[in-house]
Length: 392
Image 1 (cartoon, rainbow, N blue to C red):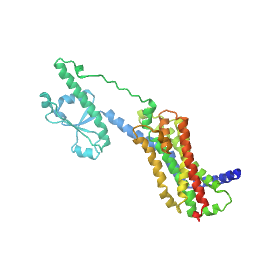
Image 2: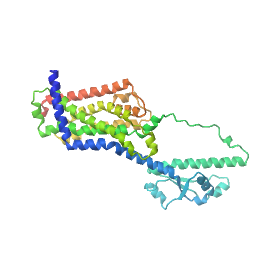
Image 3: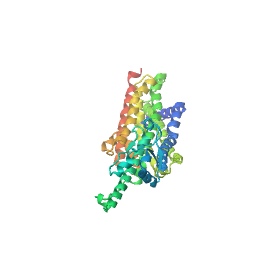
Image 4: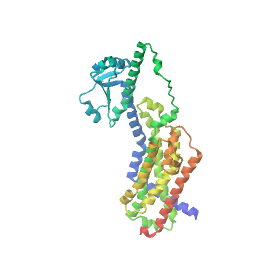
């Protein structure tokens, strides 16, 4: 009986897999979400990092009223910075994100107030809605703080007081992150994109093999066959999961040659995603692809049309899309319960792989076990629906 069941499941699997691969929509999703995913993501990240590096290398400060502070001008030029006058209407340009640098506003009384021993007030104008200008504010603030320290030291030296008197301690900064952890900051979005590729790759196949066949009227004749319901469900589920895993493999492997497109030398030096990481990702995505295929089929089997199934599948799409984002917003690190939640567990373990760590066997077994239980429950529900009169 088991051999007959497996033989029937294999025949259904091959039929459904060939039907899925003949579907042009599925092939388009395979190409768009897997082959082109790696190059597209890395090009976007490279452009972002490259633009940040370009602004840092330019060493430009936009100033309004620089003629009122010759001492400050001298200090900035000694730091090899180029001073540019602020354009007209710079406040509105900053609000509209059309000016990519913060503007330093120097008052006309700057030099006179300093001569009287007072502390003149300067304004550093930016906009929190303007990411380019806002990111440059810290650099300008550090320069102004350095100017303050230099002036304080000169004033103390004139009075014969050692500048070290103002320093109660010495500070030495140490970065405890290893190269893998720093590289993971640039590759943090890779797990999310490959998981989305698996989800959307399996979506059309799962809906078409259940709600699609029901809408076309081809599901009822299939159920008239003497083959056990489990064999039909296993064959359909295996085909859907295979499509999802095929996309996962293509998606992960696409990041390997895509690294040739990196235009930032800094990013190319720290971005670590080689064959080891790709193989780990594929292994971690196997349980997720099986689970997603089963859940989508369980939802779609209740629907009478393909469009209705698409609407109901939104629940799974939102869950798989939003759960991994908890790792981005959580500032306290991964919690133990993360491994009990599918999608979030895979994202957590893939993040460890990107940091150069090896996931613990207990974590792998827990993640795979939870996914397996949910998959079996979803498939059992599909079998139950196929046995009921709801399809008539």
